[in-house]
Image 1: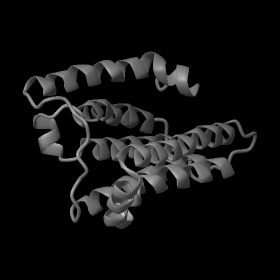
Image 2: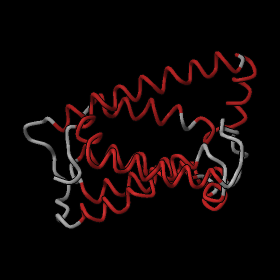
Image 3: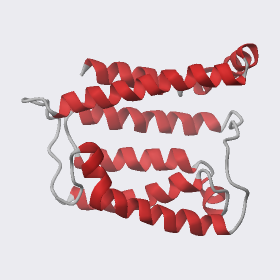
Length: 192
């Protein structure tokens, strides 16, 4: 569990720099240069992600996991339904169109839905730490974006076709995860 906690601190911590002090982030990026800043940021985030994966995996393999709550089986169906827009929103974050315009911050919305959906279907302490931390972080980041300018992210040129790409591609990714990738990557099939 220790590696999960350290990983969450590193990953969400580095992603919280702009939430805590956007001016400091901008000064550091200017002082170091954009490429070195992004390299340091990326390395910390990757280390954090690696430790999250290791720590969560160890917690899942625990002989005696700490169960906080036991979700009813039907919650898994709600989770499957909630996950459908997540993949569309992830693509819409990089494909400017109506979806991105309507949701304002589709990546954060996708993170919130993903985390909430997984909290509905999983009830161990490790699940609560992982998905609860991401949910709390996404809520805090969205609130902070109301008082700070969003840093522009690389994206495709704006266009109406982007929404169709996000919808069709998101549905394709959803089906890929539903029937194969979730089991291959995480060892658990979402459909039993």
